Amino acid sequence: MSTVITSTRFPATRSRRSGPDDRLQVSITAPGDAVTLCAAAGEVDFYTADVLRTPLIGALNTAAPIVAVDLSKVTFFGIAGLHILIEARAWVGHTGRRLRLVAGPRCVDRLLEAAGDVAAFERVPDLAAAVLDPA
Image (cartoon, rainbow, N blue to C red; front, side, top):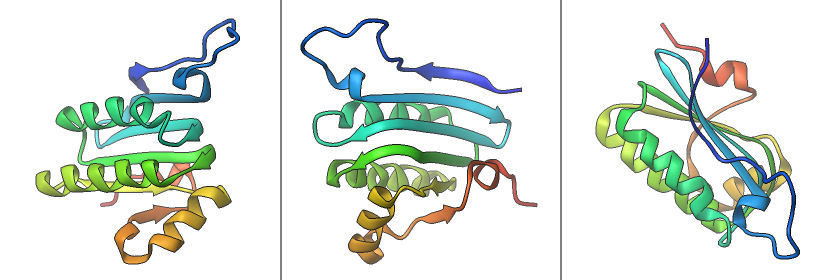
């Protein structure tokens, strides 16, 4: 059973001025004892970076051995998003945890490819592989 730890939702009605929460939705769940899952949907850029960073980095203090970041529903992925992933990788690296990415959209893959070794993450093809606990 999946446990929702935190979630940012789109508001029911949109005002004329949209904020970062209107452009990016993030949820942190625990689909199992061995995995903490951070799923993002929308645009990850300088304007929305804290919508992703705050729950992800906050969850790392109590995260499971595997931290999976699902970016499969991201529609734009800028350098601010890459910085958040690098910061998360450093946090999990100091604690002996593993960080897995579900990429997929071209906007995410393109930036990871351009960043080269700086963006060397364990990448998996889909969410099922991300939450799979290796023996």
